[in-house]
Image 1 (tube, helix red, strand yellow):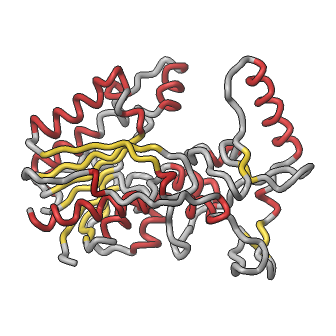
Image 2 (tube, helix red, strand yellow):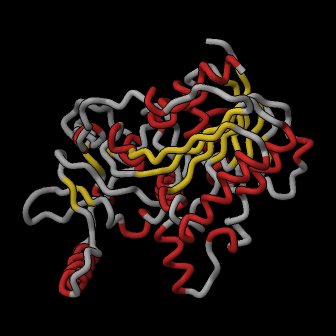
Image 3 (tube, one colour):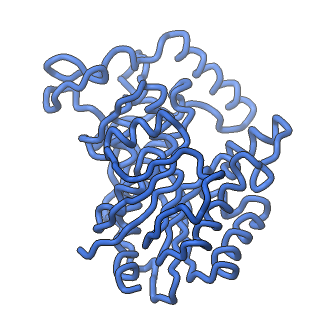
Length: 336
């Protein structure tokens, strides 16, 4: 594969980076403000290139020249849950959220200054419809009309690659006109089920403490919900069911596909609870199972607490989705 360089903005734990390394890319600059995410990122990539925190005060002229810009810019100001929470608190969302909503424009100023051959941006599906479509209109017009890029976008559900319903919008752009097409995506024929990511608990895996223990690598009992929490979640679900809405926990077996893993998973794990059978309290996913649910390889190092790991994987991307998008971008990146 021909080599090319890329920069990794709002890098999180490096999920997008993994996708572009798979097609021959070399990361030469990283930005991530969260210290715990930075710890996980550096444990896995151990970089000697510039790694900065907040991109906002960083001068665009100091960003190194690169072929591809990657950015999973913060989604909270645009997500359904994020907008709902901000509305309930009377706080601004979208571009009016000055702490996170305007970070897209930091991406735009770097693209404007460095004119990379291509870019990939990732965000929640709700970005497309936020504020009646006006937010997304501004983003596309900025990239296409102001910066002059050939821009394409698509909402992709990660359930085609991992056993999780997770819809995200991917925006790609090229400095020159191309014949890029989403029709080139190869979508797997068969959808995976939860059994593909759950610990086997029968000795086929080597124990990975503190997630699994013993010769059979059984899931540690700390991931099983307490009677108090399980009782609360059941009564909460019943209360909302009586009101006619669908709020409540998501219980899965090995033959199911899970709901979307969120950054709040560390709170109670309610969106994805693994059934342990009749009359047994369900359990949370372990951080390793969360990593698998996002398509990270089993040799991906998790050097942080469970709380931080849940946040990190809930905020990350589905790696095989990014790998597939990178694959169909590669010939256009190399040709430019």
